[in-house]
Length: 377
Image (cartoon, rainbow, N blue to C red):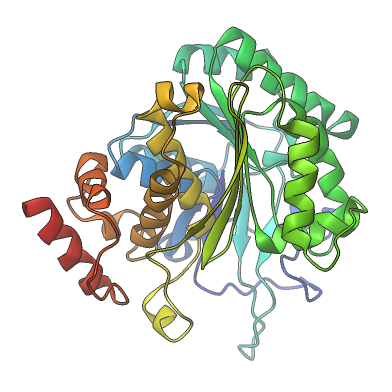
């Protein structure tokens, strides 16, 4: 549960090192200033917000379970995101911690530092009774856990086995499908060790090719020059077994590589081109923040509408991936859910069933015109 502050913020005394995602020193947390009203106006609902917002736009009944602080940022996150039809009864307000916030620091001269993630409340997330009680009340069909490796003092304790135990509890008591994902730990690849226990029990796992390039050397996997193939082989050999369907995906802007396992059919390795990919030149139309999280929301939404197919090994994986690609593309085409306009899952599904569009989809308007034409048929 993260407030992503888009406008640069001057924070006196903060010294931050260059990195993919900078985390300030622990002692800074207690000194971190609260955001003022003008800064809150630029906030986006990061982390789980980038999952539930696109899902809600598709018409999926969705909610959040997590920890926020009893502060301005936590109240803003909960109050704002509930306005999109998201169930926030699973949010736990804890006076001991501050809400997680990411921002772009700058000094008095205007020079910017890397995106800085001030973590506090989120890293204490654990499957204690209050979390379990909220999950029971929500009674979800699919649970996505974001992100393995961030819950340093909670679910990632005991080398990630605490999180794996929580996933097993969800599956046994709620009979939900569980997806787990991770983060791009460029400066701390050792955090990927916490992921291993979850991979043993989760139904689905999705990561990016950038994350694979960090995971493979951390796991000492033989690559022969192909990290993606090495990781897929590792997943297939270790986790594509048992009496339940499993799905593993590695995403990139251009294509997705998947393993889809069913006990009756074995493991299928599939590669799917992204129909809705935009080049760097065309990327000027988009802020790609949240693309990965919304991709997973699109995949989960498709599976939710095809649960029996997923469990029986008959899921149309290519179509499921294109729904994920399309969801991500629409999410980055406007602020929050504006990019979805009037479209819901049913309309977008009709669009996808007509095959790869022949239209020019490089600009937002080109995509909208193609969707409108398909839905009107």
